[in-house]
Image: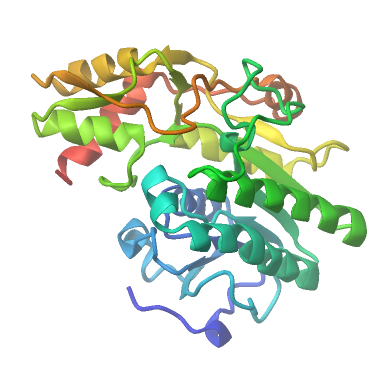
Amino acid sequence: MKTKRLKSTAVSSARPVSVVTGGAGFLGSHLSDLLLARGHSVVAIDNLVTGSTDNIAHLAGNPDFKFIKQDVTEFLYLAGKVDYVWHFASPASPIDYLELPIQTLKVGSLGTHKALGLAKAKGARFLITSTSEIYGDPLIHPQPESYWGNVNTIGPRGCYDESKRFAEALVMAYHRQHGIPTRIVRIFNTYGPRMRLNDGRVVPAFISQALAGKPVTLFGDGKQTRSFCYYSDLIEGIYRLMMNDGPDAHLPTNIGNPHEMTMLEFAEEIIKATGSKSKIVHRPLPQDDPKQRRPDITLAKKLLKWEPQVPLAEGLESTIAYFRTKV
């Protein structure tokens, strides 16, 4: 897909204009689809370090969609109005942020600063995708937004955890000092089509191994827990948060699926769903790997009237179908 220069990004002023950083990524591309379907014009910005134009190729030629290849840590300038800034840019898998620790810290700090600067200049509403990783290896279960976390700042995951924690602090500073209408969403494990096959997260790892008939690699004893939210549920929750005008909408909000399962149970579910004959093998648990992770979504239910709708079996069916075309 041909990239567009910054000076040629004018979109129809009759529609609300949304800027999506990380717009060629797994979640950013799905958000772009939803925004276009709901009447927005979309400007997607991505440096394609972890994103791919394959995720937005179907939008080529759409007059209400523009793509800019740019690092969000650089100065952002767009001609014309901007109504919403959705800051999705960031490496988001262990492999990515372990290989790109400095870039991860820069996009969480400098990138968030530049995206907030754009929102301030345009008088736009701003949303940042934070993460359940800010809770670290939690000592409280499930994790409510009021929990401050248990994070190893100098561990191998610290570059990601701290980039998001700093980003949240910066967003709140802009909200308090400049009066920018901001939103903070804390995303828990999400899965679905357009995930990268080799991104290191558990869903593509288990599915790709099972489809190839290779051993499914389980770290530790498999008793650590996670919960998985299908991408369409997550994007709907994020959209509702951005559009919410409640007095507390600027405070962090968990979006995820509270259905919790062990990694061993999840591996067995993947093997069953793929019809694979793969066996499960165990490897040492990575440093600082959380023992349990489940969102408390009481706030999202109350504030957004939101909770996940897609059952795991249904979500896995479409996700596995997507990965069959990639293996």
